[in-house]
Length: 189
Image 1 (tube, helix red, strand yellow):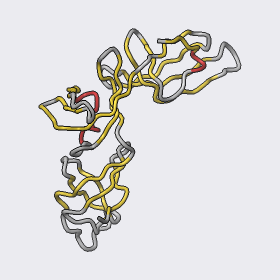
Image 2 (spheres, rainbow, N blue to C red; image 1 turned 90 degrees about the vertical axis):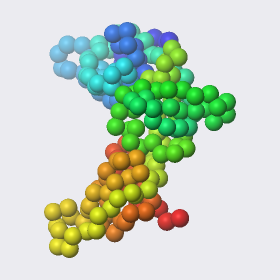
Image 3 (tube, helix red, strand yellow; image 1 turned 90 degrees about the horizontal axis):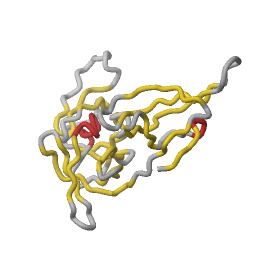
């Protein structure tokens, strides 16, 4: 661990707040006309996934966490847990499902992810920006339906439901944005 001033907190780092690891989602430096400057930090508690905002005074010392990143391959869901494997050593790691939250619906066979490890515990999972998924259920579009403005819900192989263009059919492979869970494009193999 290293100590940094609150004014140097940046998006994407891990800090220790109230003795727990937190991931910094957003920072804003505020210099009011009266009073001292502060940094407003939006962060995610890595134990339970909740987000919170806190204002740090610019001169506060904050502990930046030294985290290890390890490339792993998704194997399978085991109840509420998710099992990953190191493709080089074949070592397996079980990650509690709450660490990924809704992003667990983006996991497809053999997808490679990066696990963020702090004190031998997985505190985060980074997925690739986009994933390829197969459509398992796509209803035919209803002629004249303008409520959905050219979109319809389709079910992906993981059970994820995505709004996709009307021309998408069962069996198509789509590119899905892992940050927003939105349709990006159809993949032509």
